[in-house]
Image (cartoon, rainbow, N blue to C red; front, side):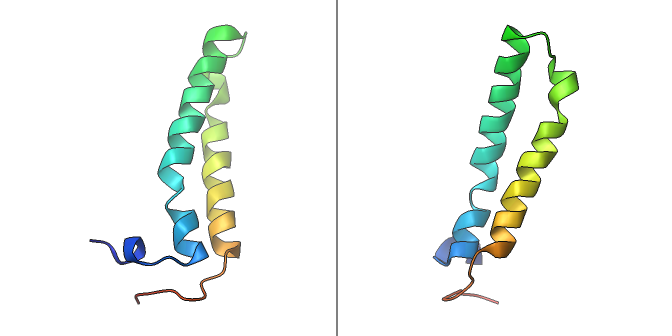
Length: 69
């Protein structure tokens, strides 16, 4: 088991949001592509923006009580 999964600090909890945020972002982009004039090919940079937002939130979160190295 990864060390960050055992840890309950704010930084590790924020890091665990990366997967769900990426899945939701990709789903929303495909949905927008189906019902608007924009295609997934035009909107894919939003995936990078979402990943960057999660990384910024992770770096700003407190690591107080962090378990592991």
